Length: 113
Image (cartoon, rainbow, N blue to C red):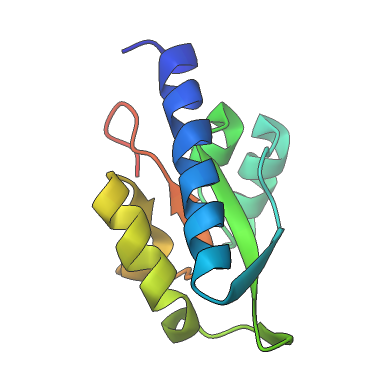
């Protein structure tokens, strides 16, 4: 699958996630979607990310989650969304071993999650 085809698949999956979230009482706003390669390198140097982030390929998005109007910062609050995202075939940052990132939703490409 080409990168463009993967990006199109990812966009469709994100639409499904947003619709599912709304239907189940969750409110979302966008956090970071696209990240420049320069920013990814800076994040990696400061320990806040990885240089080969899927954000640079438009295959990852971070969401801000609100439940009953309250902004959620704990990975655990994102669990239902993460499980739904995984059921669609995506990778959820809440499963990251080194540093869980509950608001991160991505689609694996060339072995990068």
